Length: 506
Image 1 (cartoon, one colour):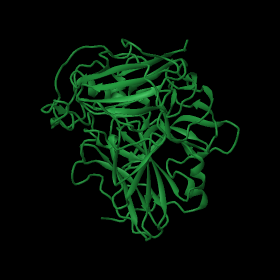
Image 2: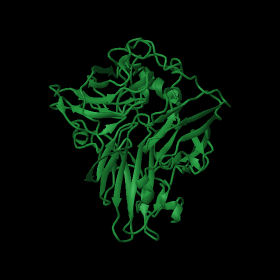
Image 3: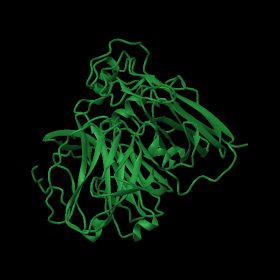
Image 4: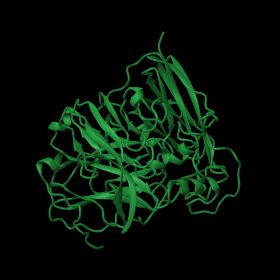
């Protein structure tokens, strides 16, 4: 192995200790609104220039807010296309939630829109709610620090994960829907001519004719024992991306974060990828999972934890009291590709890590084993359930079409509740792909896994494996239309979205 260049090696200082190293963050210290811009930027991806989108705050990509600080932001669209930003993990008033035409329209080029709401602490993020724009990396961290973060003797590091294609998102989606897929296998040929559905006002996606799907990367993986469907096969990684990014970089030139001997790290991991589930492998640096989706869980020790698209996890890592370098790797499920960053003490010998592992990483949490180990530190209060809804998750690779309760967006029937009701949503996945299901405007608690009651984690995005069922409980919030959708962007783009329609209590 070759020694890396020292580009990105950050000097240790009092301010750097508290910072998320890259994407860089702006620390909110003023009552004045912060300026946030949706704008283009250029990345060097394995020696090739790539023009992508981003969310630039006063100090770079993303924002970090202090405990109790309101989210006061003026968002300006500096792109040449309309956009809108969703504050994933936060619960703003519905009018500020950031979904096209629900109720606010997209921001026109050059337009500025103001936001002001009470924040929720934890590891969160912000991203465009136009799928093709999220695929162009229009996303950034949104960290809200808790009071204990200010006094804890630890270094905070943010790890933002992306998948990336040099092709235009419209071309990627057309390949998926039109039988020219980016997977390893051969195309499946023609399918149905079902029309594409509009996405909250953004209109039908170019090229989305649902006529078939190219081969997938992991066809015919046996799924023995899954709810009686033992001989069926699950599908992973329906597109092979050109690069997998950790803080905008690949392992050919990763970020190297300077750390102290014997130091404690709070690693905040955000899966901002369009269609890739990752395992976070801390290797020789043993870690404890302490939070998911911004909510604390009973600490769970290990060295490998998974997260689906839209999910976040916080790891505490205690480094040995010695010099060295510790790669923190994100492994693509069901494949050999990986990305990551490196924690290194001053003067350490930092060795190159190959972007391809020797073996494929396994599929993520097909038996819900990881989810079953998560126990919320601050569970929902016990109370009777007022309303239950079953949501059937369906779809197929050929035609490439994905539905909730048999319908794509635009033909959907809203999932209804009254404000203040205790509601249980049962996500029953009858497809052979996993779906990370995200509900806007609410936090929910995982209360059932394949029919077994649990007192699970508080979340806003839950991974539902093939042929599995996950129950979540929540207290219905503001009377409004809230989006409920799969956070796999090509699935969302083909219509896998409905709405949680909350009416005022009587």
